[in-house]
Every structure is written in structure tokens, then in C-alpha cells.
Image 1: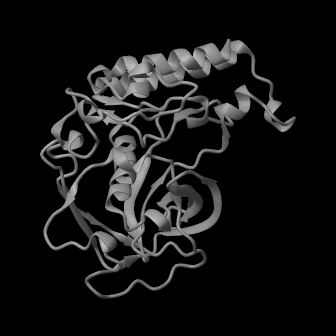
Image 2: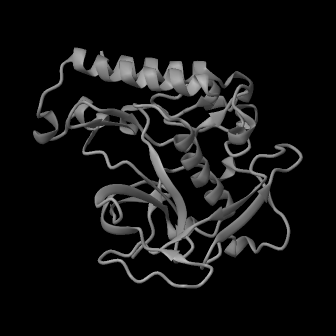
Length: 289
């Protein structure tokens, strides 16, 4: 089974140094419990200064294999069934959660990035941000771990629906069914605003809001995805600010050009904050109208 892929993020975004005796080319152990450590440098103290201990999963499809009796047990709770999406750094699969007999989504880092600690750090940051923000309009994260090949993944709610991008800018007849009015799209936008108000109250700024990163379910559910560019602000608790890049240190241009606010285009970290997301929401409103 090939590796999952996540959203595209600039590798230069994560700065850190490998500490201890870790091998940068094999920072994720391939059996039992995975462990890796990165410390922030003098310019970005504490960016990711933590030791990870993630459970190991066998993600192969089909019936669950017998669990090993060794101390480094491999979990057989999840089984991949099909690929449903792909981004720059990861792949999203539909998976079976065997204990609850339900379908969920699993996002796993690509093989090309699995041994690069900077890329792993960005992938983990995305998982941490989404898991920290428990809100009806933010996709819930269930589990964080590694597979038997040492690739980091996280599982999340499987959304039966389409991206808002497809509904807002239909390219096929199927994308236009059912047709959505401007009022319908404004209702979606208001739910995205609710999610952002909650995230900002918890000290998190998304930085990559666009219709492509919003899923609309079959029954009107609206969920904001792809928190890979998220940064923490001063009012974020220490438990999460140490795992997500600080807005004060995000001094590199990034984002989606058609929605990007000036401070992201210029890499002006001093101006990053909740207003950055408000600008992005305004860009979406312009697209709707």
C-alpha cells in the first residue's frame, strides 16, 4: 500500500534542529512506538520541542490480523479501502474502523516526506490544530499514529459530500445538482465564519481559507479542512502553541494567490492575526457575489 498524502506546505516553513542521536533520515521508527524529537533554534525557540510517542498501526485492508504479543504491539483497528483525495504532502483514504464498524478518513504523509522531519512537523501541526479545535464546523480528528512503514497519519471524520469549490464553480452537470443560490452559499460562508470565530478565540489562525478547503455534506454539514498553514497567536495555550508555528515567526510568503492577504504575500509576520482570516473570508464573499 502506498503512502497517504497531505496538503502542500512550503518545507522552509518549519525550522528546527535534530537533537540527541536521532538520524534525520530515519526520524520515525518503523516498529512498536514511534519516537522523534525536534527542538526550536535560537530564532524560533520551542517551535516543536517535544518528544512524540505515537501508536503503531497496520493499515492494510481486509480482515484484522492477530495482534502481536510483544511490547511494541501493532494495532489493527484501521483498514484502508480506497484513495479518495491527494494533496502536496499527503494522501487521504477511506478506511474501515473495525471496532465500531464504520467508515472514516485517514490522511497519511507521502513516502517522499516520511523521513523528513520538517515535513513531518508540518503534517503533525495540521493534525494538532484540527484536533485542538472541537467545533461543529471543523473536521474532527480521531487518532494520530504511524503505520508499519513508519509513516505518520491521522484519522478523521469521513465527509460524504463535495468541496465547496465544486458547488460554487461547477464544471460538470453533476456539480450543479442540487443548484445552490447565492443565499445558500452565504449560509455556508456564515458557518465558516462561526468556525473561524471559534478558532480565533482559541488562538489559532487558519491562513488558507478558500472554497477548496471547505466540505459541504449531503445534509448541509459545513466543515473547514486543511489546517496545514495554521499558526498560533499569543492567546493560544502553551500546550498547543509549542506544537503549532507561532504567527510571530511566520515571516515567509505563503498561501493561495487569489485569496492571499498582503501580510501573507509579503511575509510580514507582525501583521498576521485573526484579521488575516477575515481578509480571506472577504475574498470568498467576493467570489460568491
